[in-house]
Image 1: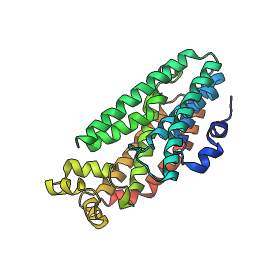
Image 2: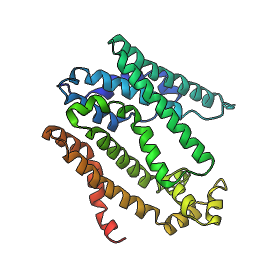
Image 3: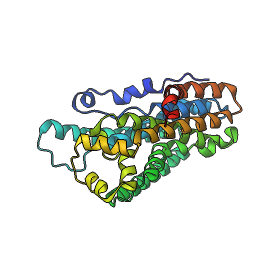
Length: 288
């Protein structure tokens, strides 16, 4: 059995001086990476490749996430900002290329195809979200579902190879963890009005608000006080807390389906911050 050290190994690809000096990278996909490694490492048929497969997948994810940070327009006049944008493009390409190099070097051609197909699905889902957003047709439910699917897709590509040992519980556990992570982030996102646009709260109000409220959302820079008023009127934070609490309960049920006590314990440890947060806010939910 291997110990988990994927973030440390990944640093040899991510901690280049040029990147660190001139641009910022997205967060490493820590939770997804730990989950995949735990499942692969607990499988006698796959544990010898657990480190390689998890590292390759995390680098692809980091590459996609880095490209997502690239601004849509390249009309950047300020030299520092322009260089940062260029390096994000190059860094994303580099991380994505590393997965191919690592897997090809190990003769894992089928895994290259598996992840390549997953990348195509991620891009398809992103285009779907983009079109719905552009047309203002994205619902709050769509936002949660599609965001979770985009975050999960590369890791879901392991569903079939993991099904023999884990009886198809991997997709449910992965999606449940990702939903908890997303809702957790959305709750904190509501604390700052500047982060409101494009959030779950934004799409919820766009879906359920009045015509004037929808017009206010689409009016560009919004007044923080007016945003706070809208959030309070539509009970956005309360709804997010309720959804989060329900999802943590569902997560626990999914984890209990595992036959491995060791893996159960490991996953409950990973989910402890979510469970603790849900417990700390249980009184808030009871008062709703």
